[in-house]
Length: 366
Image (cartoon, rainbow, N blue to C red; front, top):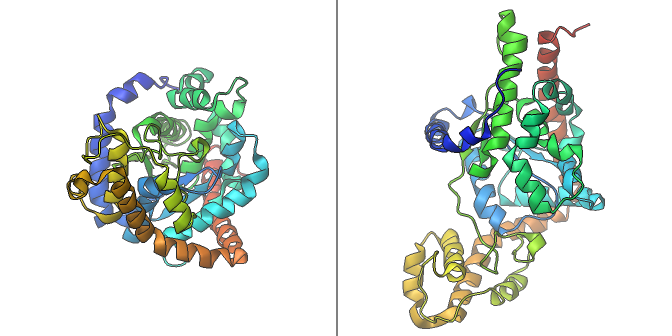
């Protein structure tokens, strides 16, 4: 199996990962077809503005550059720590609406949107991949530990522990070589890199054959973390501090009115000492492109009321085209279903080719 993954080393190598990411970013604009991006979301609810500014805009950018992009709706993963499976189908459709409205368009971009459960070829890699990792490596994964803790799980199912291997299947079945992640997701990606390396060594290189799988690299996100309207935690629907992309303009205004600020009427951008006010300024900046310090200077002594009014106006203006497109698409549920089924069919074509290679390397062809 080789040397075990040393997760402590991963944290120490963050700067190296950052440098590799920078070089990939530069090359993406010159050679977009050299890469295949794999990214996605769990269908646990509609997307909010934190998702939009944090990841969705970047996916649209990559797709517009011409980078082949696989967008996975990780419906199976919901089963690892959620009981609300009754909502998975509807949430999958809502995610797709958000993607399309934001500018991800499989009809004009090299983009494939698909639900995990409709691509069995991906899951067929799970058994051979599980033979390439140890129980100790799975149980020590720091990202899994954090997810168990954040979900408050007392009885942890095996699906949670094996999720990093499942994620390796997601990335490697389509030979994804670039994965947009934050620093906290590097341990998951290291598992995918290790599995690719071990498979290639065991079944390919030792037999004098070409490797099957690339070792995927991280495209480290530079996107800011958007705090919730309470100003103290990351924006999340479950915490009740989010503004959904699908919210109306009036709903947006009401939510922003309740946003937390502080007692000082003089508005300044100071993320350390004034996180609530600074978060609202940053969201305005993300909408308009104006520096948060300049926005703060313009508002001056206008206080929290003026700040919230500016945020309401900027956010509604920014999201108006997206929301109009979303409403148009929502009236055609068959089109959404077609996007997902077409995406699954295209993903399966890729998966079938990969599985043929895997069987050949493992001497399982009949």
